[in-house]
Length: 358
Image 1 (spheres, rainbow, N blue to C red):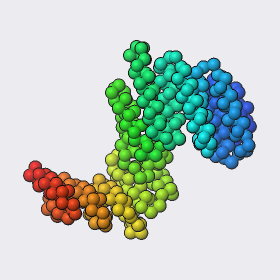
Image 2: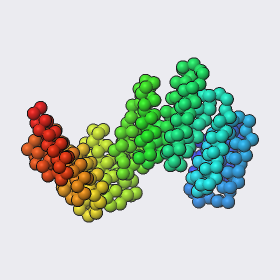
Image 3: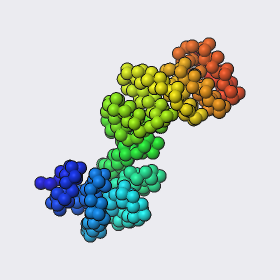
Image 4: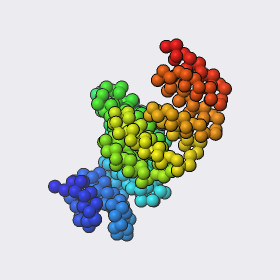
């Protein structure tokens, strides 16, 4: 029996004709749509026959349009819209997403309607439109919350939304992923799905750390403990200040998960730092990361390079507090006194004094 994975594997090997023939062996209409889209995207990635792509997309649209099931139509159009966007047909993508949402509105079962809207929201998120996706997820949540069904069924609906939000976060750069992870974690946590909550919280923490270089594949490698590969990706995909920051972000995650080789990553990053030109924002970020990594003397070096008074004050305050936490109060006071903004300087000196008194 042919399945989606077999078709995807054929397409990835460049056997596009065989893959397309197998599509029609699938029984489920959504599987057929997804298989067609997988082949179309593989053709673009692998440099296959581009003139096949419009016909493949038309076949997928035909299946969605003629399905008697509104759930299949809604989700099918969502998958097709995602493909349009990935292939660079942005106008068609927007129109097809609107069609998917309209079709979802025709679903009478509120749980299925909520799940369909959330699935379309996931595909919207993968295009990078995090704001619209979050609004759609909110609508899906509201539809299920207002459904007159038993509590257990609602819980299952909420969990499906949380799962899709987590999956959306997995596909996005860190800054866009954070909101999805945070909401997914809240749902899992409130519904006492502790294992899923723990996994999502870990993804959230990593996304927050990797704010500068948090590409999905880099975060995935770090989560899986493939640190050398993650660092190789950072060094290949980023240059200059961003590469330096990315290495320090990776080191901070490694420290958080008790991977002792983070020290070597810091040392290598700092060896190359002399050749890197830093903006005030980048210097502040480097100083903050080094502070969190416990390399306070190095952090101070970068903080002193910052000319902007606000950024410099923020960086120096962080270092002073970290020194006080180490009970190095004299050094902490000295750093605090060098803070350029008077109000931040006064607040930091008070905090250091309070900490010294225990």
